Image (cartoon, rainbow, N blue to C red; front, top):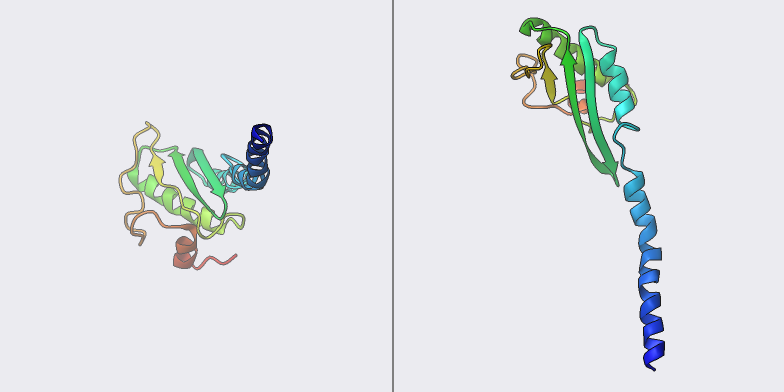
Length: 142
């Protein structure tokens, strides 16, 4: 009887793994650092005059996820930078492959690497808006 118990115990973890494999595959398959999310952000942001580069790190997992986006600007002038921020927000909102619930860029950096303080100041947003908020604010429909 001891031998058969061991055999059963040996099969049980394998059965659990077989049941868990699709869930794990979905979770891992949904991850993307530059795929589904990164490409549309980069495409939209890099099309804006005054943008030197962008850093995009994102993940989509089982209906949730996160987006971390930084924009490096080609200016030291804060007025020019704020104008570029608004153009970036509009470009991101106009990109049809970016979902309403995704975040807009959180960080904007001046040419010297310093971060632009309160980049959305005067644009009518409290904090970092999601893309749907920006679309609504500017009347952008997709």
